[in-house]
Length: 158
Image 1 (cartoon, rainbow, N blue to C red):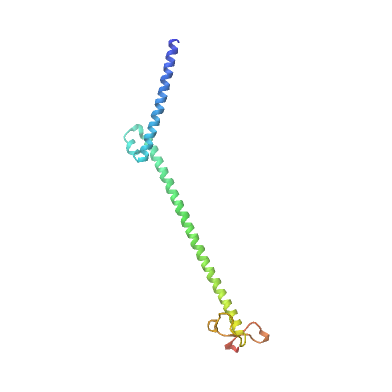
Image 2 (image 1 turned 45 degrees about the horizontal axis):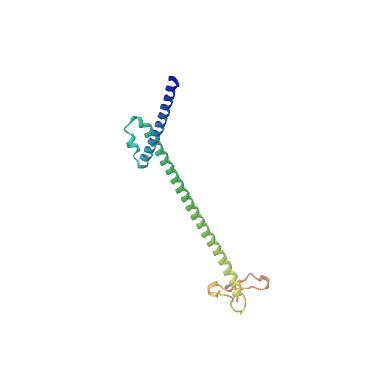
């Protein structure tokens, strides 16, 4: 081995050592930075050294991005919950109104039909649970020419 080859091999070994040392130092710095970030001490730790300003700025950017993402996520969740509650309330109110209208119509129709059935049979027994007091004025069938239409008692019915 000549002198030139010897020095070349030594230089290669030194370069490899430097690379390994730099890599180890970078890993150590990253571990320290992550540990400090986890404890919230990054800004106070890096504020003193001018060579650490970049890391400090990077930390601020990361913190701002994380805060913005969390705030946006919370706002979206709240918006979805509010919209869901409003939709449920509107649907419930609509169902209650529709049921109330249907019930009123059904009760009116049933009352009129029950009045004709109960009071329409001359001298016959009352049918079902309907009572004349509940049904209002008596309705009796008219003559053959108006069958099924009924005439209130006060207008000449029996």
